[in-house]
Image (cartoon, rainbow, N blue to C red; front, top):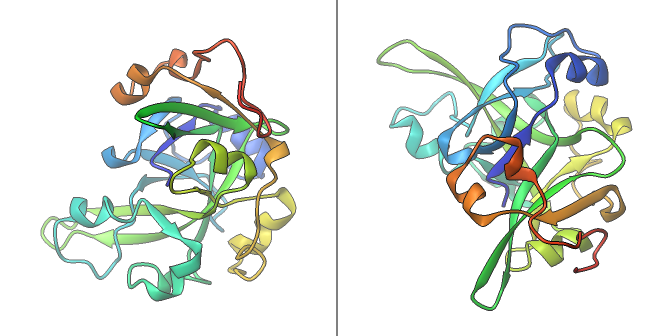
Length: 232
């Protein structure tokens, strides 16, 4: 599953790529963002402006501890979207794109776990897809706009990296972005993002576990690069 993401491009770069106005968003780079800390991410919706929502979807009907449910809705499986109470009413209505410069995932070989950083090899951004909702805290009146990242079965590259659960974020191509934002779900259900458009390398375990928001967290930690399904 996808619990550690990255957003390091400037909002101006994002604005140029997605043809959206900049809006009122924080431009601080996120070299690593841990979903369980519910960070704010710049996302794309049907609105004219780039927006900034918290990761971890809180349904508008929820009345409990928001952190409890948000920790369970960081990801949403494409295969079961229509079955889940938190997501089914958002399908076709509240679609979003999460521009990502890369994400982190763990490979397990025996007892050894190695974190990898996976980034686009052809483009500046991965266009991850998601759903969003608006939650109003009944006690404080605070409004929280939140989102979830939709996941799918891993492609060949991600099957080698995320080799136990074999999942990955559902990433779409440029020509599918408008349809997704307009509520079309049929075209993405069975889509697999090509391994050839991804690159990956191992990174320092300590940096990932510590969530160090510095460029070095993404730096290669072994001599050889892992790309397009070739290990070391």
